[in-house]
Length: 56
Image (cartoon, rainbow, N blue to C red; front, side, top):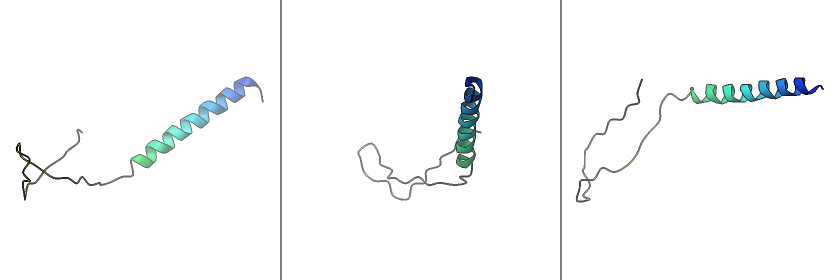
């Protein structure tokens, strides 16, 4: 295989692997975050609702 063909093949394989990994990451529809909310003294705050958002 000539060296320019090898380079082209490597570029195509690298691009394919990047595109494939990005496509699979976009399939995630939901997730979860778990934790404990505490006040400044360290006491647990029961019944607290925390909202998280990502930028558009």
